[in-house]
Length: 479
Image (tube, rainbow, N blue to C red; front, side):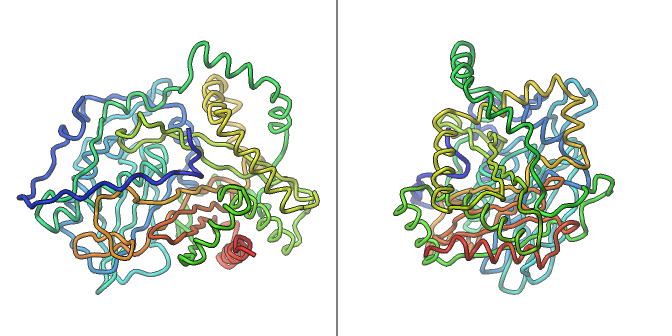
């Protein structure tokens, strides 16, 4: 198990030599075990059920990935590349049948796959407005493209029930590879072999039977800490009441604030983390807590509040390397009381120890086990999720790590060459939940780190989100 906060780059595949007439790869050739349509109906995994239940039109359980290109996209090639990539990832072409509340399941989308939303416009800093994806009626993937005179953007909108960030990257890798092959008219760049039958085991526990019992017994001493955690009441970054009654997300959805570090700044940050004998992820977590505390202090908010940070955990193992896009994650939570004296060095040591324990003790299993228990307590869990007063966590942080590192495409100055295009930047924008005013996604591409904030504009103004970003950038800068 590895933390999603510490996603490791995949080994870059070698580029096949020779030229051949381009042929669209068949879906069956990517699996070798079963065809995608043979999977369905496919029961929802516990985490998928949680994400489905936790969504409302006012709070979409959806995240974004923006690919920014130097060059103008070809609409016909992008449509065909999308068709090829979709066919390799069945859950991104499926919908949830929730008519039977006791047995919700995935089923194939009964209509032709959605095509690219093509927009003739010059790409801007802001994301184009997106709409709520109802995964009960349409697949959990929407692709929009902005084609300018010499610049282009592709915006991938994913439903979190269908896949996580690493699954989204697998899909993006396929989309770019297919586009490059279509541009050259050859199968020059190989698509990674996939086994769609592995989707059947995506919700399985990594431990079972006696091993799981022993794991649980070793966790018994932590029950007191768990009880304190459950009784603790974390605070929202900005006090407000959630907007459950809104029929849609805000008009500017997704509300974003993005910052790119230079290669020099990225290397200095990684070097500082290594030199201080800590992990980059612990540093990012510590500095986000300190940033939120400083921001709240500047806005005269109570100094005795607990803030809770949620971070995903990647549960993929080497055996899952051929699994199509899916949600193979769990999550952990870290609390901090802002009234305590903030010794930055001691705080970093504490976070570093906590994150090491999470990895060493497989604590990602704890949340997956809790989901199985909560299934039998639907009323209590629904009341907690829909409470207009109870904040489940204050902020979210996910470090996707190096993105598209396993792409077979050639590079120019560490940037991918995609046909006649150069992929300049990759930006991730995470989800935002009720009473969670902002989420932060960190990713690294071509040696440059990108910070992407998704904020709730009903509770936090754009200028306030920019202030948080400015404080965080200053905080993570090495001394």
